[in-house]
Image (spheres, rainbow, N blue to C red):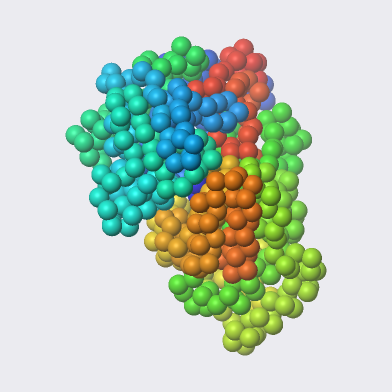
Length: 552
């Protein structure tokens, strides 16, 4: 999911009216301040969300800022527990054929928020819509493992040929193209969730707006004020509503991390999705209880457009890779414990031995620069004939993105590449990369589920999230061979072979692996740090006594 899973829009401060709408608050005075401060009731959770969502339609969604909200509104066959492990959601149990190609899921009795029963036909409708070329979903490839899914996406077969069937109202059968031992983890992803077909059919694209939105999850959509907040409220028809502690959740777009920190410090946010790196020392000294960094399955990447010169030349791509001083970026610019990345699949991925890295990892930085300059000269460039290009980043706010971009600008200048940094908010950035309208771009990927294919499939020829349009038949064939392999260990070896091709081609430039940079007040209970960095509000509660004490 773009981690890219996405980000960055300007922060619009939420006004007092939004908080007053929660149904009550306490007026408390900070000892060192002369202003009043609002503390909401125990049933209200105030979340800083990494950016303004583009959509709340699961089929059309692609970013983290959407995943967290949709994950509160909807539940798929599988869902996440408090530790972000895959657990039964709409499915109560399932059977798998001996060859691993047929899965039969049995659904629980459940209702949509408007009282209409959730059925297996809702899943069939949703999945057909995802792979339908008319939907133009960037995640259509997620269900290419379902029989005929890829052919349907390519326009070669009708959606009715998809290998998914409603046996009856509460039995769903899937036929796969190849064994998929990671299927249960994949089915936690928002794009595989059911849709209320009776609403989508009636309302069309407008179904995902407040007033029309019908959900089957722990919360329902109450309001969406663009660039201010999304409000969800407890769904009384949710099958596990009795165990949902919160009454409402506000999601505030907080891509300006410094402004978000100020709001967090005074209790206008209970949780903030990212922190400003320039304030990390202050945070560690003054509010260390709010940060609990853990390694994440997230790789920060620089993407290049293979369809534009000179980035179609592997020598230029390798020179860029060589010039990136990953240790300087992680240790001097970021300083949060990020790990330099020399391959695209992050450590800790399930069932993957990995072990590959760029062959230049053992070289000193001066040796890398010398090699990069030699490659650039062979490609026709030099001090007097420099590459002049643009580097698009996903933030208009000052912070880590700008600081890292400035460092990269200096590094590439050493190898005859002059970049102009072009910051964009998410309304511009994501359409641009999805339409391949860039030279070099800040990219990245956060795992949708713990499997190496989730990172490598990004670079398949024609894949919906293959922003740089990398294409190598040998790489595609290696991935195909891995997908057909039923033995989990052998499959991992074949995926490693595919990653080796990616590295040799310098298809993109991984820079670092993330650690979680969330801020959470201790009075927020049930929010556990985890490698996927998803936190469903269903499991969260507020210790109101602690909250009041914190700000009194």
